[in-house]
Image (cartoon, rainbow, N blue to C red; front, side, top):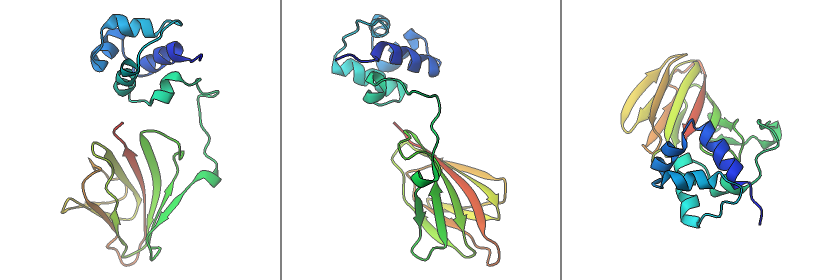
Length: 182
């Protein structure tokens, strides 16, 4: 089976701004092994591939599949998913591609008086929440943080968190970016 392994390893290593030695250190492999992976005749074992994928923060498919035809991915409106609270006061629309790995971007809208318990994200993830309009209060692991328009809070995504709009008159528009641990 022909794969694009050598070109993908080289391309992904350079995109991560790593030398062969740095990638080898991150993967726990000899530098010569990484150099050999970048040769067309490379035939590594599964453990080597898994170590390199882990070190680069990519999937095994990313190492062996043909590179994308384009350097961009357009997300049509039809691919966007919406998550709403049962009462409709909290709406989060996924704007990143459904198939994106490692990051989730959502437009968030909260009606006046809204309270929504967020779903904890996987261990090691980080959430960045920036308010665009209005004032939001996030309760992160029991501690309240109030954010005005333009403010951003970053927190470990696995912590329990609640999104609130305490203003009885004005809605909130915000952007949530969750960077997943791969």
